Image (cartoon, rainbow, N blue to C red):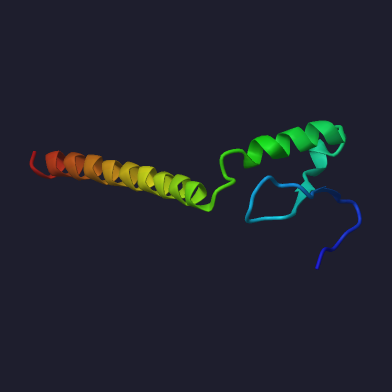
Length: 88
């Protein structure tokens, strides 16, 4: 259910994907004054490269992997600092 009447909605009928026939996007209030053409171009750029399911999954997996590596690096740095502080 959608509540409220002050929402601008952009409905895309031709997604260019064999998986999806239609996309419904809710425009943020601060961008509701932009032209429809500009909003549609922004939507196409947003979905570019995600027209295939495996590609989207691969991008998501890569993002998770990079975040995990960052966490492990932070934990390793903390362990090294703790080691030197304890062994002084």
